[in-house]
Length: 263
Ligand SMILES: NC(=O)c1ccc[n+]([C@@H]2O[C@H](COP(=O)([O-])OP(=O)(O)OC[C@H]3O[C@@H](n4cnc5c(N)ncnc54)[C@H](OP(=O)(O)O)[C@@H]3O)[C@@H](O)[C@H]2O)c1
Image (cartoon, rainbow, N blue to C red; front, side, top):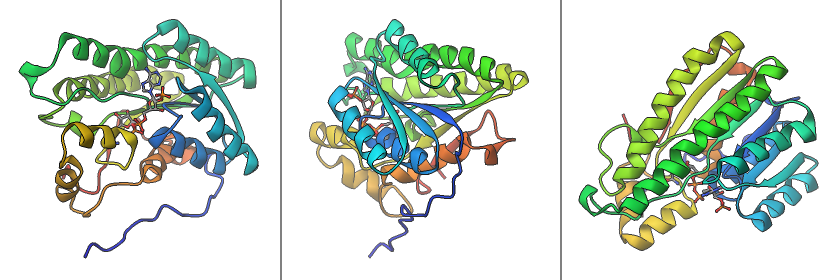
């Protein structure tokens, strides 16, 4: 039997006290877990996604626990909507200290030669170009506030061949490149840029993959040395550290959070 190594209930220590953090893909999964965690670590959070009702539910929950949270509806496929969402953070708080660029969609699973033009276009737009646009809007605000930290959610699927989700893997690898280059370009401005590569994590994204290709969850779980998938909060914990001042000399890193699956 797998030993339960889940440490998802660690007590908050105020890791992000005084910081304003923007989070995309915050309506569910890893992004919603990050919003709850960052707020419990005393950040003021601004949650973005398309699902207004789901965002409002998370915001209500955080406020009920005494946290500071707001929601902004945003479509990662629409550049203007991304820029407006980031600008909303300035209207609300007059500063931006951290950004967790985390929202993404899965592709229709299949081999390279079955991936459609529509899928590759969507993967480019939502999973790559959106983060480029968001980062540039975030950096403009961070320069005004005197620095900041950005974390981009990539995937273990970016590290090597990504059979089953080829376009998704390619866009995540492109995101790693952007993350590393931005880290070098923005270091003089006091802006750190890092990525995380989660392994299998219990969210709707994996449920969708399982529905399209039954057996996926079992196969992924079996490939993880720790013997289980991550809880969303365990991925968010790595982002929290990278966004905090405790990671003050870490930039340009692509950090695996995968239970050893990529080792
Ligand atoms: N779960 C895993 O096993 C796994 C593994 C490796 C990497 N990741 C990465 O982790 C990140 C979070 O994924 P998750 O597992 O938490 O997935 P999820 O539960 O499906 O959540 C995806 C989030 O992205 C948002 N989103 C999707 N399309 C959007 C769009 N066009 N505009 C705005 N928001 C959009 C969704 O919100 P709305 O639908 O409300 O817009 C939702 O909040 C992603 O970058 C994913 O690639 C996940």
